Image (tube, rainbow, N blue to C red; front, side, top):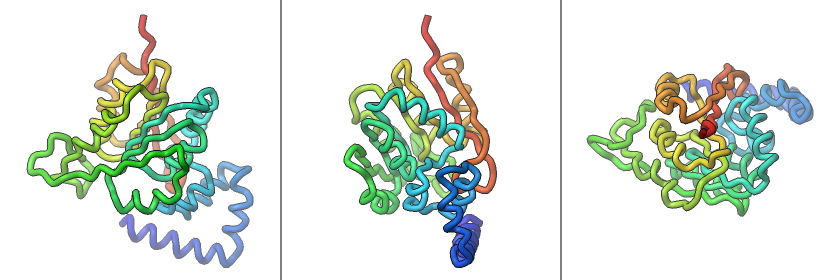
Length: 234
């Protein structure tokens, strides 16, 4: 179904481009959130187009909040599970970005576009009959993601911002809460999925959670992105 949708969208984009509609949306996008969203629908899984629109693949509301957060921290250290348009977006707003990607092909496509303040590491899953850290995403059964999740351990120091937008997100969250600075922020995307909400709930009073919901670049329906802050200590 996903492939059919993408094929349809790209065919429609060609028609609209010939009609001049895409040029109009490109002109309006920097000034209009709705126009930016409409234009992004035709940029799905196209990192170059999403980069030109300067949007991460989270809710627009969460992106606005992260923008405000990073404006106060121009030298912010960022760690990210799951690379893509968000990597480029973060690199333009933070001091450094360490991104971990499980898909070597996608990383190879993204790497030539990355600026000097980004280090992209590929940690592919391995086959396992009984993964210690698995992924519930369809098609990923029998894959071990323990090394992927543990990639953060190879980077010393705590982080101002941690983004969880790749595989084995529940396990990534458990790692992230121990590596975020007391005044830091964790972005946990796609929390429409109940297993992700359950993972956040297990943290209890350790974090303060803001659930954002609304328009999301490249998607024709609203989604949710969670923003987590360490709870103040007494």
